[in-house]
Amino acid sequence: MQLFRQRAPFIDPSHELVQVSDNTFRNDDGLQDKLNKTSNFNDDSFIGKDPKIEFNDEMENKADFQDISQRSTDTSDHVFLRQFIDLIPAVDVDDIDSIRELGDKSVTAFIQIVQSLEGYEQLENNNDEFSFWIKYVETQEKFQISIMRYTYTLNTTLDNYLAFMADIDLQAKLDNSIDCYENVWNQDEYGILYLRYKKILFMDPRDFLFIKKTDRKEDMAIEISKSINYEYIPKNAASKSTTRALLLLTGNYVRQIDDNKLEITCYAESNMKLKLKPVMTKAASKNEIKKIIKKYRDHFNQN
Image 1 (spheres, rainbow, N blue to C red):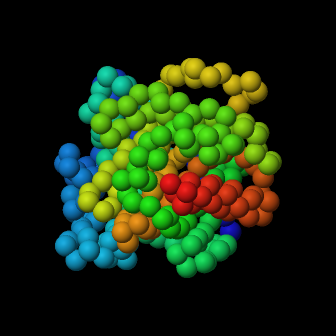
Image 2: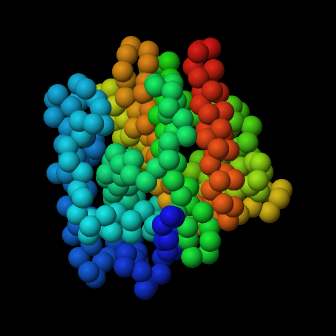
């Protein structure tokens, strides 16, 4: 049975989490207190700064999700987590503090949600080469929100990988389904990006506008992306009608497991504004992910 969820809301005064004029989050029911308790970061790193997710020395050496200490199973925390993921916040690039706050809280949400495999269907399990899980939830508008979790390896270093991920021109060159990829704004480890895809199989052109944060400590890193409300007109205008899709929360947990080998665990929850039944899309979604991973591998194996 599929879950039934309210659509990912845009900022609305009736929503439990709203954004006020100074771009800080307000909550009248105490959810902000919960958010503050689960997002206690400093400027150095996400690692070891959250009271629910502790990385001690042994955990850092193992660098394994199984070693992350207890996830909260409190129902109210789960409800809060869902509200945060479903929220598409407005941002102001002149208010860097609110952008940092959004990035930090997105990292917290990613760490908490990526550990669970509850409700997923596993479509492939090929040891460290590629493993893939997927599940869906349905909105009131009958859109199917896909939630994918997958792991794979790359033969490269963390430095090379992060440099590659920051090079959007190179990524667009490797992925011929990308129609436009633009840096909108960036400061330190934060960025706002615009990404547009061509028609892919059953899906007409889609675009995204999202914030990205990259957080690294030694041989581990987390990258997160989350859609935002922000006025932006792409420099490269679309030639065809394009639907704005939503990255509710996506993230990569990357760790160096050998001198020239990375293990990457990904979580991707997105509303592509599609009403096709999961049986029609889940295998295609997996295959599209495998195609881009192959291109990544080919790139790093040749360089």
